Image 1 (cartoon, rainbow, N blue to C red):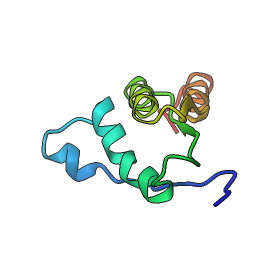
Image 2: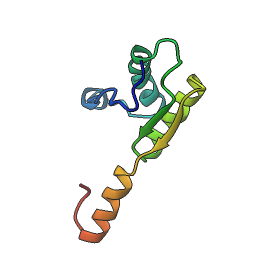
Image 3: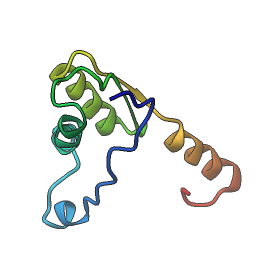
Image 4: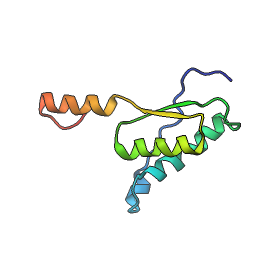
Length: 94
C-alpha cells in the first residue's frame, strides 16, 4: 500500500485522565502503536509521523522511533501557531 499521508486516529484520552492517569510519553507511544501496526504490520511503510509540539508528545514520538527505526517523528506547527495567536490577541489558546 502506498499512502502519502494518513490520519491514523483521533484518540479521546478523557477517561484515561479522569482516572488520574497522565498522557505521558509512554502512554502516547503505546496508544499509537496499534494504529501503526494495523496500517503497517511488517514495519515497511510507515516512516514519518507528525505530532503536536508539546514535549510529552514529542518524547512519545521518540519512543516510536526506537520501536521502529524506519520512523522519523517531527512536530507540527499547530501548537506553536496557537501560542502565537494567544500572544497576539491576548486570548486563551485556540
